[in-house]
Image (tube, rainbow, N blue to C red; front, side):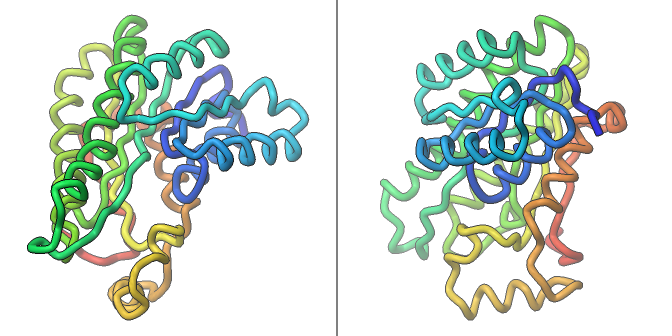
Amino acid sequence: MNVFENKVAVVTGGAQGIGEAIARGFFSRGAQVAILDINKNLTSKMVEQLMQETPSAGKRVLGLKCNVTDSEDVHQAFNKIVSEFGTVDILVNNAGITRDAIFHKMTPQQWDDVIAVNGRGLFNCTHEAYLIMKAKKYGKIVNLSSTNASGGGGQTNYSFTKAGIIGFTKSLAMEAGRNNINVNCVRPGVIDTPMQRSMPEDLFDLEIEKTTFKRLGQPKEVADLVCYLCSEEASWITGEEILVCGGRNYR
């Protein structure tokens, strides 16, 4: 299934969790995939795994240690991607962090850390990719928000950024259509990732109970939607926010 043959996909935070599933989803569908992640060891490990699983992987996968909050680091990463693969067709902004605390105990550093990765990182990566896409009048951008964009206890910083991502998506989509660039947003709910499992057990169980299926979502279930939104089958979809939350109503 080579839906993305001759396409180049960039996935930030692509070395674990949802990001890893997304990167694997594009790779399994024939894309050349660049994995950007702050964790060099996990990035190298994933590239090695793909090369072991697929003999031709070395020609189709690139792993780069990248701090998305650093504009120069991001610029160099995209230069490397273009040097290796020639262009960028798809960008998935998945990199994100949490620094949870009830508001009266939240520190300025916790606030700034989340804003830097979830906000500035989104800008840095999108700006680099958008310039490439605009020049060739083609591109697909998917931004990962969260169901907690609608609010989450102890997550004023995180919810602030994830709600902002929705607004960012809709605003950029209004500009991008004239350049044949689709921009959409996916809002996962409780997904089986290391970040999700770091929640206190009682809250973790409560979140699962609130889903229609009474289970965790799987990273692949998010990845499949992201891949669809970046395919030509979704060419008339832009500026949308799509919940992937097992039936829980967050609106």
